[in-house]
Image (cartoon, rainbow, N blue to C red):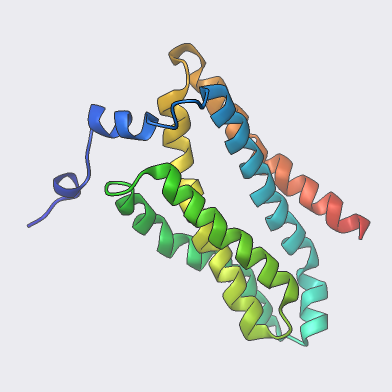
Length: 176
């Protein structure tokens, strides 16, 4: 019977692979880029959450459909996270993050141009799929590149963008 440790690198091998970024990229640059991406992805979540009532009215959705739409993101996210984690054992994590964020970006644009329930549902599910690559691969990359005495600070800078991005999403949506 196969165990997860039989297929996934563990210990120093994984840390070295996760810490291997582009030669010219400084660790602080990686942190700033990832913290900004974290902010933007949660900004999107805050905007969508704020507009769920308007989306329900505009698309003439039932409460069940609106709830399904609200959860679609998480379905894509949960389904894709273990897939991206496994793919990171075969492909460079930065490539997978770029691939996932490309899917996320396209899905966000498609969300804005959706004209019926099925397309917005698919688009929101794909935002979850795309963001899963970033959510499961960015933290280990930050941890592997952070100077040892600053690991907690760096992770705090990265994760503070969850509530800040979400809050700004509400603020931005409230201004429209």
